[in-house]
Length: 516
Image 1 (cartoon, rainbow, N blue to C red):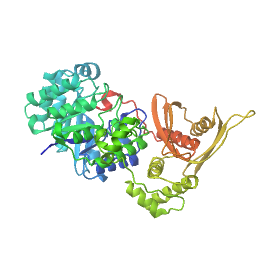
Image 2: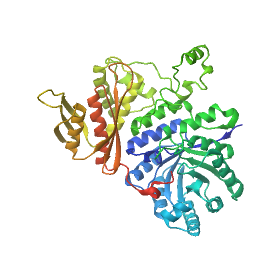
Image 3: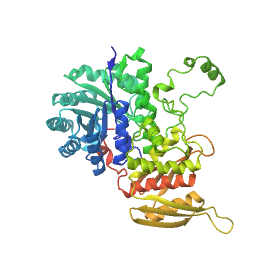
Image 4: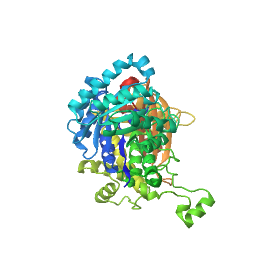
């Protein structure tokens, strides 16, 4: 029988540290529920001490998501650990994840601590966490740049105090595969009691080696891997969950490992995370990119037509890339919409369905056929906008001419409050965004703007992603509509709503942001 590998998903914690990502509680719950369907063993729901928003999200996930272990991150100090436990205590399977920097550069330059003081903090923090929660994980941050002999002392101290999972993070993506495998073998050989705990790894992708390092660590004896959907994470990101899982599945002959992941949910999970975070998936992304199973070369096409195994090492259906072909139109009713939404994994209550149905009808009047991808976009557009303070109530644009520049009039609503603002710009999209910015009184600089079509055809839904810089912060917004100007306005408003609610990422500093 193959050895079991625990999949620890950190999309909602480390993944959200990607610049510009700021998820609301409802969005985090949707992702957590999909991670449950995917079959992950552990969901790292957030960092409760980092902000009130993080605390509320972790608490709601702990209350409502059954099945996986629900984990919260904490620095090696009592206030963080207490805050984590307060958020996690209603979970059926809670875990407190304590971390402390252990490399000399971090201890000297960041914490101002000696080796002796660090060991004392490890001992006290793990003991304190273990007094609150039976399941405790400990991470020595920047382990790959930590002196190995000191690392063994740190890990042994954490094991002795009751940590059931020890995670070895390559925090800055510094290691190369054989070096990382050697470090894992060293921990297993030199730490007393390590055989009684689960050894985990958490690799960053700064050198493009996160997945490779994770796999060699598993070959060396680690049995938990920390990763994120679409490889999300700060800087170059984390190890990609879908790549690790499919490598284990496809190369079981070599690795002799298995996971509990329902691989048919991979593509859906990837799309959900992409649409809610505003981070598009690159077309040639392994496993989940739209070109991952496409063949352009004539030689490849000929081979695939004769036998798919000639150029495909896995079937697209095993990762859920094959969609239902049911097509809805303007005459379709609520029942058909609900059924299609549920086939795609989205369960809305009656009130939510009514709102989504209105959006569906608006699009159906402009688009002859509505495909599953369109339906999914409608559902996710609803999830993105349902919790926003300000909603787009109406817009009017003029392309201008020789006598007048392009202009836009935008109307926003928040409860009974309405704001209408007019602006001129270099084009209609620019004018619409300026009107929104003026209405909300927020200065923002455009960093990134991209438009993609959800499906083919001239009537395709446009999917706009915008990233803004507000002060020294970045926020990302996404909007979908058949009209590119409307989609752009929705994306811009989606980004600024994150500023309004105060939940966008703050500069917590490296230690406060976590070991990932």
